[in-house]
Length: 213
Length: 213
Image 1 (cartoon, each protein chain N blue to C red):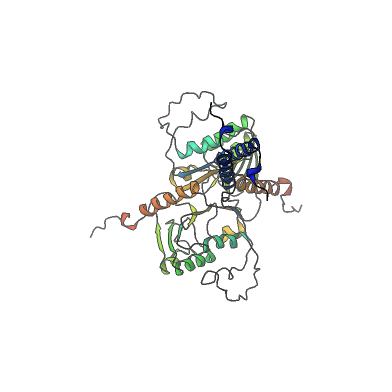
Image 2 (cartoon, each protein chain N blue to C red):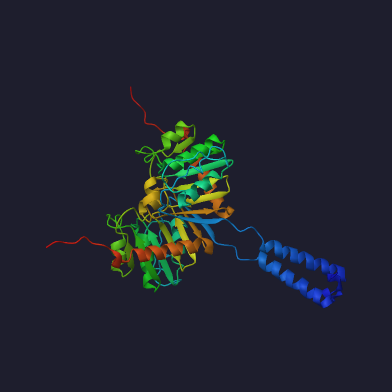
């Protein structure tokens, strides 16, 4: 019968070293990102985050709001970490600070795509018009139920999802949650859902009633 | 200088075996649960899932709905896996099938606690009254913004969260998502948030205006 005791010492050493390296690599696998944010979030000044270029010093802000770290500032920080793409599915979007963050990414050359709800995009205070005016691609449903998702995908590898609509009311007054994760088993299905909706809401698919002359 | 080449063969073998076992154990760590459900979900018959005792045969159902696996049936299956506790924070709860599942768990002896929104619990079709009538503990906010969470925690170890309100409209007509995860880094903050809200919404904390005689 074969026995490891018959192996030469050098081979045994190599096996031991390889197994040890594997064990260390396995235990050191990078911990997945898990951040949970709860709202309401108290008002805070975000100017320090909203500098034009990543890492550039922000203009000093005279506003009296605290510079504290809050759930909103953490959310904005995650969004602003985008370098290549930001895919957004947001039911109600009326928060001016989040709209500024999205516009900033657009100006930095990040590819921003935004899907929203046709009925809510027209409400007073909606930021959708402003974002479209800034040149950001927006698509929306045409019929039926609400496009009720509220998720963002940063660089196709970080998912930001939860109960939070991007409205000042929700951020400052409601009990809400946002979960930030980066494992592919979560991100991939949301990416696929985004692409499905993006294609389905392509304006070339809209149907308009015939107008009789 | 110490060198592993100086070790006796038996010690080397033991080191190699231990390192190999560690490596295998590390790579075999149970994969965390990640399930993503998207809605709308087509109507389906849930009778086979809603048997009185876990695993018991369900009564045959004459309804014409398909017995297919859908996002709703997967959600119900996850809820019905509860054996000890179900903690619910649900903004709008009007889906009779989900209310049946919650009542069933209550009858099976699972400790169900439900937090909801004061303004939405009174709307037409709300299931909150029915659940209270069945003996389930319900608490709600008294003032201010919405209790807008939509999450469930099963047995303090599985989190079910997302954009989905528990309404038939949302399930059958809206674009919605539900994420099911079981890692403690996600579940623990939601458990803590639930306990915070549960205490805050204790009816002994309600404030009522003074009535003058």
